[in-house]
Image 1: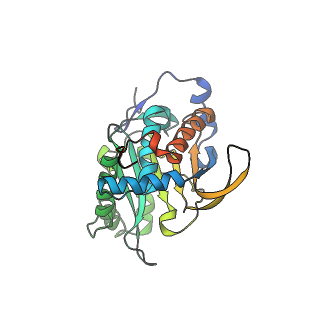
Image 2: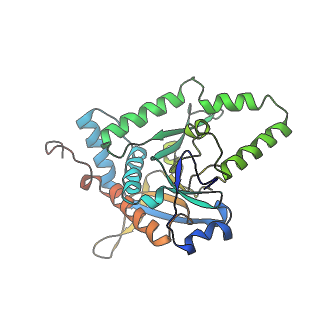
Image 3: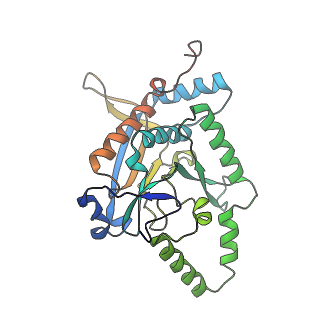
Length: 282
C-alpha cells in the first residue's frame, strides 16, 4: 500500500492490535522511553580483554565487547531491530550500530557520530578490526557525508534550514526519504552506543532522538569498585561497570527487552562462555 514502503525496513503486517495502536497513543520516542540499568561485575571481562590482546595482538575494549554482544542479542531477538516511522512498525533491513567519538581528547575537539553495518557472522576479532578501522576513519581529517551535507545546508539562512528540517521529517514520516540519505545517517540505526568510560565518566541515561529510527541507546560507564552480592548472599566490593539503556517500548514489550538485555549482561560478565580463546592463552 502507499507509504508503507521504506528503503531501510519492511512494514510488519501481522502484529497484535494492542502493539499496533501504541504509536497512535504514544506519539514520540520520549513519551515511550523506558530506562534500565545494569551493574555488571567486570573482573572476568577485563581479564578476557587482556588475554584476547595477548593472543591476537589486537587491542579490544569493553566498547567492542558491548557492540559484539549487542549484535548477538539483536540477532537472537529480532524484535529489537524494529523501529517506528509514520505511526507504523517496521523490521529493519540489516543491523547497524552507531557510536560517537571525539576526534582528539581536547576540550574544543568536535564529537563525530559514526555508523557501521554489522554482519551477524563476524567473530569477535573481525568485529574489533572493523570497528577500530571505522573509528580511525571517523577521527581522520576526512569529512563525512553528514559533515559535507550540513556544511552546505548552513550556508542558507535559518528559516531555510528550519524548513529543510521540517521537509526531511515529513519525508521520513511518509516513507519518502531517499535511501542515499538514510544509508550514511548515524541516527538511522539499530542502536546508538556511547562509551562515556573512555573519557573517565560514569554512565548516564541518554535521550532518544526524535529524528531518525534509533529505538535503543546504550551508555557505558568507567570501571570502578561497586557493591555486589555474591553466591553466599554477602555484599562484596569488586570492579564493575554500569550500562544504562533508553528503550522505545513501542517496538517490543518490556519482558522481551529485559530478557534480551539479560543475555547481553551474561556476555559482558563472562565473555569466555561466548568467545573462544586458545587453551594455551586461558
